[in-house]
Amino acid sequence: MNLLNQWLIEWPRRVADHLTWLGPLFARIVVGWVFLWSGWGKLHNLPLVTNNFVDWGIPAPHLLAPFVSGVEFFGGLFLLLGLLTRISAGALGITMIVAIKSAKWADVDSLETLLGFDETEYLALFLWLAIAGAGALSVDHFLERRSKSGARAAAVH
Image 1 (cartoon, one colour):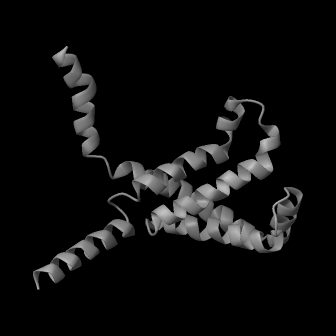
Image 2 (tube, rainbow, N blue to C red):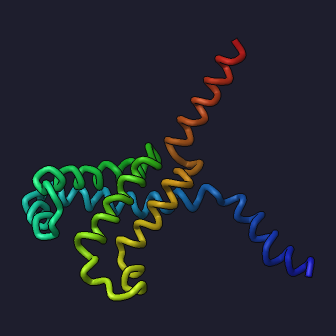
């Protein structure tokens, strides 16, 4: 039993410990790229986006269409950089909740349908990034390390 535990649990955990930087980086690149370009397209086609918001019953569509488009564009850019990752992922997660509720909810006939939406999959990634953070290869990580070293230096003096 101990050998089985070593091979099936301990060894994969030790390998994964060396790759903790990869999961957040890959997730940020994938969703960052998608939402950077999605937001860019919406910013360059605001009349259509505004009309869609009207059709979906989203309040204040003339205000929220450019706002959400900007959240997607800048949120995607920030995720690519790993800058303000938790805030960006949180904001983009909220947009996915609103998208599901306003544009997709009428199509939900089962849990399988709900979980099959791209928006739900993006929401899962955004939730993970909002909780886990940007990871080691990010501007956030660099700023955090810099802040901690500055605080230690100030505590010494």
